Image (cartoon, rainbow, N blue to C red; front, side, top):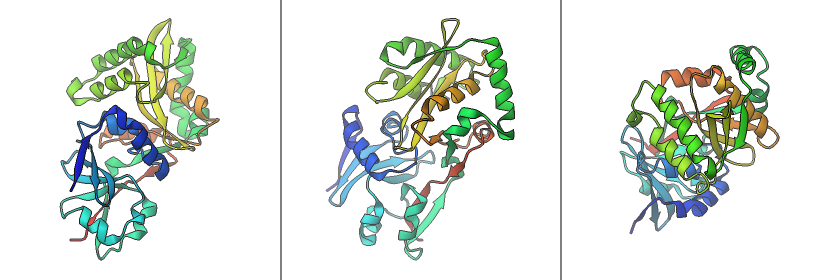
Length: 286
C-alpha cells in the first residue's frame, strides 16, 4: 500500500539526511528546491514497501520518481515495478547509468534540465578571456558605487522584498510567469529552510541579494540572485563577491538549470561553466 505525504517544513531533517547520504552534485537534491517547488512540481513523499521516494511532475506534465537512496542498491525487478511505461526515474546521475541494462531500461536527458557547474576560484577571480566582459562590467560598477553587504537573515526580510519587488517591476513577464512567488517564499522562510545568503546595499538602500545552500562538502548551490538593473554590473559584483566568500570552503558553484530560456542559457554560458551536468531520465525500454 502506497502512502503519500505533502511536503512540509518539518520534513527538512528527514529529506536533508537522505540528500546528504546520496552526496550528489544535482541541484534538485536540496530541501529548499523540493519545498519551494512543491506546488509547481507536485512533489509528494511516496512511501512504498520497498522504500521511500518522491513523486513529482515535470514542466511537460510527465510523472517521475525522484530517488532518495542509491538506485543501484535496489534489484532491477523492484525498480521495474516502481514505474510504468509513462513514467521514469529522475534525476539520475551519470555514474548510476551502468547499472541499468539497455534491454530493460531506456536512458534520456533534456538539455534544459542540465545544471551549470562553475569553479568557485574562477568566479572569484574573473581571470582570463572568458571573463573579459564580466570583468569590465565589474570594474564599471566598482567605479560608480561603494556597495555594502550584510549576511542575510530573517531580520532583513523587508529589504529582500524591496529588492524582489523592484526586480519584478523591471521584468517583461508578469509575476505568474517568473519565480517571484517562489523567491518570496524563500525569503519569508529563510531560517526555516536553513538557507545562506547576502544582502547588498548601495547608499544604504537595498540593491540586491543572493540566496543558496550547500549541496555537499564541495559544492554550493545558488538558488536566487536578484537585483535592480539600474545598478549596471551589480550581478557581476554579487557573483564575484559570493564566490570570494565561499572559495575557502566550496570548490564548485552550481547555478542550476536554464529551463530552456535562451537568455538565461546565454547568460549562464557566458560565465564559463566548468561543466554542464546532464541529469538523466531512466524509464522502461519500449
